[in-house]
Amino acid sequence: RSSISELPHSVEVSEGANGALLTVAARGALDKDASFIWYKMGKDGISYPIDSFFVPQPELLGLYVHNACNAEEDFYTSTLYAMDITSAASGTYFCRVLDVDGAELDSTAAVITVK
Image (cartoon, rainbow, N blue to C red; front, side, top):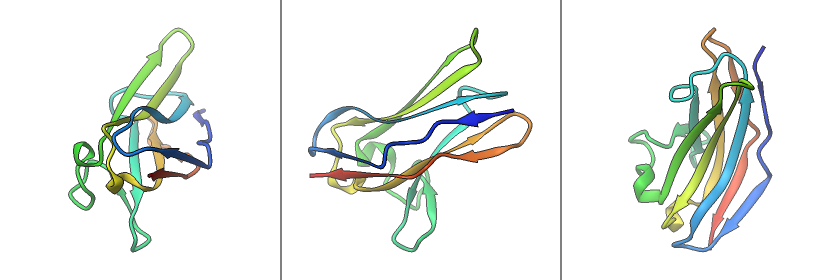
């Protein structure tokens, strides 16, 4: 059975900053490279994957995702990093985790504020 950690409620960062922002940890039958999809909530109330054409591409937001796994403990992490983050990255994010059996789990949402 898969499980997922909760995100913090909010994080504040200065424009142009670099470093880890939000990390989701999960256990279960996961694929490190395919199981984690990060979403940004749109003003229309619909959530869009950050790599979709509905939101600026991650590099325009100044964001990138790094996934890692500890195979011995069946423990995975997906971290949303700032890399010269822009004000366009301000918003609400969550991570959807898909396990290889088709189960979907969503992390809590967290707000990134770029000042």
